[in-house]
Image 1 (cartoon, rainbow, N blue to C red):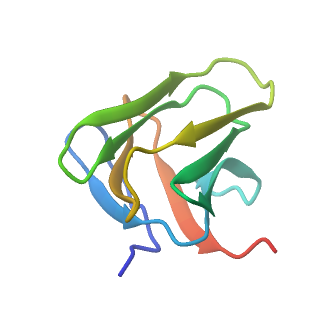
Image 2 (image 1 turned 90 degrees about the horizontal axis):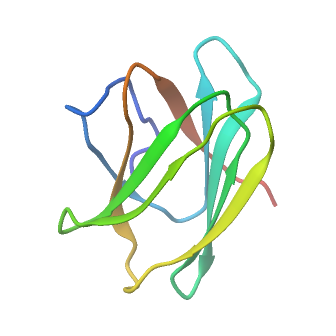
Amino acid sequence: AYSNQFGYGNYSTLKKVYLTQTQTLTRDNETKPEISIKYLGRANINIHIQATDPDLKIYDAQGRLIWQVKHSGNVKTSYQLRLQKKGIYFYIFESGNYKTRGKILNLN
């Protein structure tokens, strides 16, 4: 199963996510997507960031850091991440005081 809510947290909070479709994070009380993460199959993930100053880290199911980005400014930034394993159980959290709310969205 997967979590469809990221909830609130910082370094002390890890949420396990089974990414089966597009994950979009928004800032509090905003509807504009800030971070969208889409599983493309074959362990490829697209990460699209349009946010003020998120510091995003992704861990695999064993707790190993597999990807991180520090992003400043309002410029749209896109990344493609290839994970080593299929299954795509991993952890996502934001550092500092940047709190996000996330929902699984189907953006077909």
